[in-house]
Image (cartoon, rainbow over all chains, first blue to last red; front, side, top):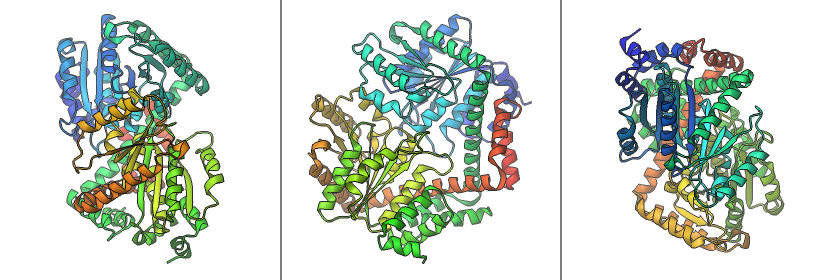
Length: 314
Length: 314
């Protein structure tokens, strides 16, 4: 076992930070590290929190973390920020939070940018969660902005998924229906001191009533005002209820985890195959040349891919 | 050249339908067909239309198609329906439209379900568009529900991207901002006879004013009431304006097409590599076994993927 692994298992924050950077950059040593850490994972409760931008997710996550801290738990937070082409990730969010939380030794908080094609933020996030899990954090909260398939894939890998809404979204609830509604175990109506909270609640109840879950769980609806720290305890209780449900329904729990694992293996394999292809047979310059050929219709993309596959000897 | 190719180039609707089924099912003969058709593509104007469910996209697409038909154009429509686990795709939408349009020989309409992991709806859609393009349709309209990354990827491959909103979305516009706002060349506020149209327009203008496009195009905002066929001509004119812009800015146009082509090559390669892996080294039963091992923490996913890669001899 290498010394970074030992330090992580001992909960050393600097080591954890370095390990997460390694998975984020897809550095080769990260894989060995993750293999060593894997047997020490599976203890943390992974909570995925998603919702529209401006729904108050960050504040809610901070409140939830503080709640568990007060109960003596150690809490890890991984926040996925929509990529910015300018900053390469929302450093701002990190800095604001740093002031209130980074001084607490029982909290680890990290922002990850949702950029990049080849690595995949979904893969990096799952790995970061595994690192925090192995490091002994009791709860690991993953926070994403629920707009894309990537973000949905990320929260799907959590043990419990929390979807955050705000009153007055109206058609917004409709908009999210197809993608996000079906993955929520707990729904939060945040900013519940605003007008329209009842209407949003009724819409949500209607949506939930028409889509019964195959596992038999009835999704909870919780109202919060995160800025006032109101409703945090109710949210924590709803999450605990779902955790208890999973524990008492062992079959559902295993099939959920197996589904997540299958998806993960496919994704890892897909990335590894593409990485290998790019490393062995396809430089960036060549790729650009191929792309120009296709764009100007000198060659079709299928023949181009045939050629790349032939070069790889596959 | 095989006879299916000839029939497609001659515009035979049954042949076109069979070819689209072949790409949808990832049948091996589809690749040869697409290679033969490729030199005949690049003539159609591909219009991507996306927006939230309930925004009235289907009606709008039908109106736009009828508008171009009246001008003597042939129009192909590919509608991506959110997957339903029960029907395997929204057959309903097809059936309603069939009644009004399927009798017109100058219209080809096809629904595709956004299901499946291994094939990829983005790949199948681009292929279906290529078939319609080769078959001589002047406009090919691709209609998606803009909720996931897949759907965003699909409309990105169009020549012109139209984003459909409705009044009163409020926070909904915010919600879509991160993913969809930046890809629209033309924005439609449909159901413009409803309350709140001015507010939505102002929000939209504000959003567009703060995010300048690198290519210099100023996105258009068009108001329509698709059910009354009001504003269809203005929408068609806005699309034509963007087409003219692309033609007069050759460099932007080529770099857009090259970017799309690069993305397409990567996606094709990724799928082909995974298909090869699954065919050669990984049965469905084995995959499920591996997944259970990982879920129950008997083995880590990295070691599992190592084993699969080793089996493939890669």
